[in-house]
Length: 312
Image (cartoon, rainbow, N blue to C red; front, top):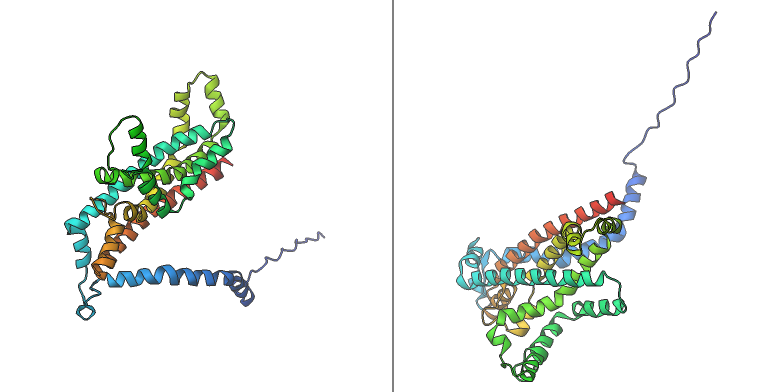
């Protein structure tokens, strides 16, 4: 007689989901974040919802009883009014010029700081300093210390060499605003691009040099393709902040001489014309534009993280 034995079947552990203890543990881990979440919603989202509601009303603060619902007419006015359209174009031109100039100069400074030389730490600190200056203080610095036609540094240097004494803000108002913003935002671009340069594969660069590649060939075929994501990130983040810039325009030109961008136009509509509905509509358009740019920026950041993870 042959005895047959069957191996005991291992019992499969049964997971019980949704236990009260698991739910309590999940809420216990999330509870410390609730005050911050509530504060963020109360400070950012509720005012935006209120602004969105006001943008659908014809609402002048001087005549509160004449307030009435107008639908999308405020948005139509923002997009069709000549002054408002000019402010939109000024915003685009100002943002594009500042971002491109800051990226080009920042790339040059990043390439300089990527090299080893004596005093590199001091030079890096001095180059970062403009980005740490309060925006209003930076605009006042450019207005009075550099641009002033009587005692400004620029005219002082021109007087020393026998050159003309122009009124910089009156003659080139938009360029004056752009120059102050480029000075302030170049360090930001430089830091992003310097981080990209320091993440390069140095063995690949050394191998290219051994094969006889020149500095320009290494920059064109290795450095620049590697920095593409960082250039995109700097352009997108810079655009988000410069689109919303108000300090430089308000301080240097007070929105005159064709320098009024969309944020300054919102200020004029709200605080000077008291057109709450029109100002709210313009503000909502600024927020929508910033959200669109921020969406692309987040995609670039996530792609950078994926590249770093795949490289690790």
